[in-house]
Image (cartoon, rainbow, N blue to C red; front, side, top):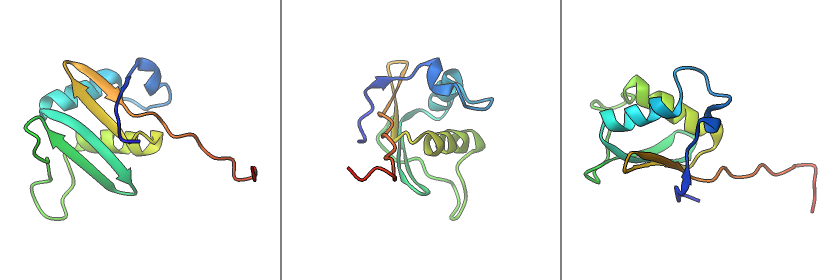
Length: 105
């Protein structure tokens, strides 16, 4: 579930609002030197730097910088569990399928 083996394409942003794009997310990863972001559900994220250390807000009860928050919101809306940046390429996890609550099979 938390593997990130699917290369992100512009099609992943078909319904995203500006400024979100593949280029925007790549620039955020480069700016903060991030390795990956994992989404665990609700408001639980893990933002990992390239040095394998977590990137955390500077103050208790503070939020991440606005551009990182946009990436987190995008991941939650699109149900992406992980985005990884490797050798200049963004990878994402598979999007889980929605279950039909009316289907009892």
